[in-house]
Image 1 (cartoon, one colour):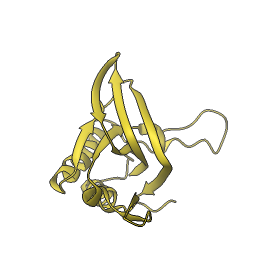
Image 2 (cartoon, helix red, strand yellow; image 1 turned 180 degrees about the vertical axis):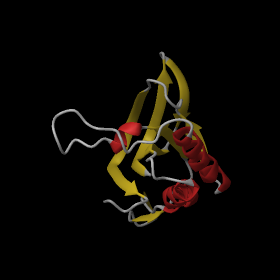
Image 3 (cartoon, helix red, strand yellow; image 1 turned 135 degrees about the vertical axis):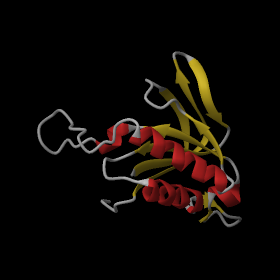
Image 4 (cartoon, helix red, strand yellow; image 1 turned 90 degrees about the vertical axis):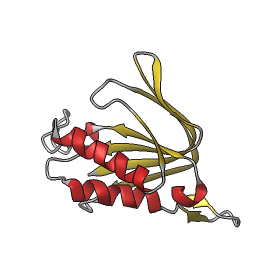
Length: 149
C-alpha cells in the first residue's frame, strides 16, 4: 500500500462539482492499494499515518502527530500511485488492486484511522475527483508498506 501524505491548512474533494469531503486542516492522504496488499497493510498504513510526527510542537519542530495536533484526514483513493513508468511512456497499472479488494482495503484504512481517534473525510472510491488543497510547509511524505521507498 502506498500513500502520499500532505500536511494542509485546508482541503476538499469534489465529484461532479459537488464537495463530498472537506477538512479545515490536517492531512490529505492519497492512498493506492496494490495487488499484494492485505488487511495488515491497511492497518499498518493507518497506524503510520496517525502516528506520523509532521506537525510542529511549541518549538516549531515537527514532533506532533495528527492525533496530538488535532485536525482531520482527507482520504482519497488513487490507484495511479502504483503506476510504473520505467519503460515506455504509458504507465502500467498491473500492480494496482482492483475491486473489490481495493475498495475494502481503502475503507479499512479509513476505519482504522477513525478507531485511532482521527476524524476522516473521504473521497468517492472509483470516481473522477477534483482535489484542492493548501499544502502547509510544504510538507509531503511518501509511505509504502512494502518499503519500496
